[in-house]
Length: 568
Ligand code: FRU
Image (cartoon, protein in one colour):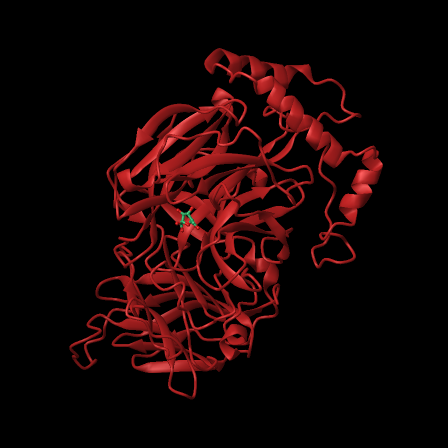
């Protein structure tokens, strides 16, 4: 249909057909960024959950690949994550002929595991049979040069793919392992799957499940390598109990319960998709870090439906201790959910991707043949707010690389009750940068019953009378976002207006706005306040205008960039 085309983003990932929800298995493997995703290949609604898979070298240009994990008789393949098991601590990977014997790492891990967990009987035998199968599958009498050549001819090859090849992975004894939930109505258990081919296919471990507590709401494992205690740590939720459980493992096969966190913050109906990351604190002390625990909730978000909250604190390898009692959301809109942070990011940066949607209406959106969009990648740091509390600041990650020459739009001041406009390029994603101060209201201005201290708005509109606005209210010092005057989609829960928490202190604010087909992402004040919204104009938005009421605005900076298309 027209909507399927019209609303297809140009720089955001969306599936070609079917239904997509949470991002899964986000990992940089030294060569590719992987994006696995919750995927129903059979129709544009949730269900029959598989893991779809795409790779990229820049996090914007995605090459979609074959399904990586299927729904099986054991259940649907619910959300999870991926890690790089470089040293084959799991023992899941077959030994490679050219590898020198690698005693150190493997033995230590195995010894540690043996001390802490009593290995399951038959484990060694199991492992040998997995290894034998893998050996057959992977090597099958071929040399590593043959294998490399074959990998070069896989769907991610130089010839066939728009993804440029980057240098090959350093040789590794192990490889990529996914940890995810198998779900049936009766039971949710944690599975692991290893990849013989750099992440393209994922093979279930024969000893699955690796974690089963007899629950039907126990899901969404996210695993990270905790270097100080040399083990993997899993965060996973007991959804209905509003608990995040922490588990530890030396081999990804045996998991030991470490601690629980929660109920805390906003509980909603279910806790879902937890993520734990050590995040850099901006400021004078270089290298200062703090742990952030993200917990998604659905339904029951304050804006309705799905939302993600976060806690800032300490993590000692066993237990997460929040620094304070502050509850904060990642977004003031309602269309950013189930974020997952990238594992193994260059420079240990914290970068996440979220599902740009909400469970309240995701199955009824106007596009029909495909549904589901991911946010652009966002880098997270911690910054002190004016009261001294650490808050996350989120900004687009390396979006600058997509900028085409700026559309001329020079402007240094707007007088009260005036506006300036410029035509938008057709069919392209755009980025708008603004840095503005509202002047104090002059005594000559008429008194009105709204906009008492001035209001600045960015308005995207068309000849058909539709408009989408984002603005700053000088009286409340809040941002607002209004999608209610767009006519492409109506739904009782598709609410129209949102406002941010207080942007304290000042009448100066900055905005970085990305508009791409049916997606709007607003990053205010260097990422201290972020609003994400699906937007459905019935007709294309053609004009951008900046408007100010009841105050004059000083425009310190304005820039409008068309963005190079990365997706078709
Ligand atoms: C979150 C979620 C997860 C679950 C997955 C199923 O959106 O409900 O808790 O694993 O989606 O697709």
